[in-house]
Length: 303
Ligand SMILES: Cc1cc2nc3c(=O)[nH]c(=O)nc-3n(C[C@H](O)[C@H](O)[C@H](O)COP(=O)(O)O)c2cc1C
Image 1 (cartoon, rainbow, N blue to C red):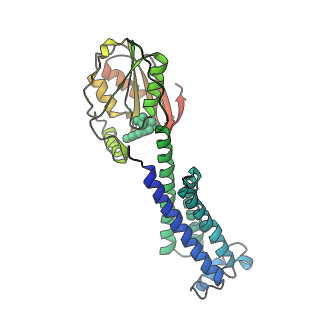
Image 2 (cartoon, rainbow, N blue to C red):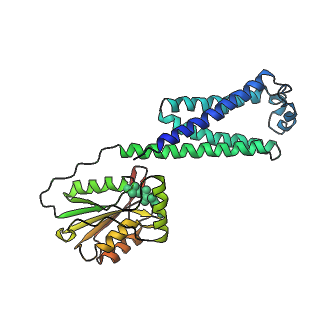
Image 3 (spheres, rainbow, N blue to C red):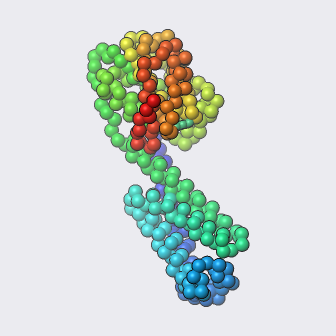
């Protein structure tokens, strides 16, 4: 799958360099001439007088220049250097310094009347923070996907089957763990629609929102040959993921006994998704496991 972290990291390098170099440039001007006259900033000094300790700190631009250099300059350039060296801390710091910029601008909103530059830089801070968050998520997703899966058992005539659908590999990992523990065969539900990447996410969301079935590849396993089937499904838009809905509809009457595993972001149990599977399959599940998964960290939700 194409890396989403790589472009997000590049975008974050852009923001940290853009904000960091701008801050160093601004600070250099302020420190070179603290009166602000040569760079046309002296008119700003009266606005600084609303700040605490203004009589000591803000009679010229020296302290503001130092603060700008430290808070937005050196910080962002450090994050850029860490990002260039592919250090994970660079991603976190790059995002955090976006928030720092927004806080810095909040002080400007307090000092100055509403103005174009402050508003623009507040938006820049938000973009930087959002880019940092996206890069952090993508980095963790890709690190999770690079981890090896548990080996599949080699049982000659398995009596159990684990059926799963998975976009990003979280459900797949748990499905493989169940198969390893129970000696079950594994069957993957595969959609014929686009489910990968960012576009795939939105496309899946559309099916989820409308509670539609999503077309899947023909089921090429004899479900009635197994004594027990474990169906492993993600939750999409607070309900059963669309490809698993289609699978259950097509598998109606073929499964003798089933339990379910539901994987999602939140702390809910999603019993309604289990009831929907029961209804579609025409049976009553023997057990339900509900697992919260946040970019690779799993937590069981007890009933
Ligand atoms: C389109 C879409 C909608 C989702 N909606 C929800 C939701 O409503 N509640 C929730 O807890 N998780 C939701 N999730 C998160 C997934 O359930 C979660 O990331 C799960 O681990 C995905 O497993 P997979 O990557 O193996 O397919 C959604 C994911 C997608 C793709």
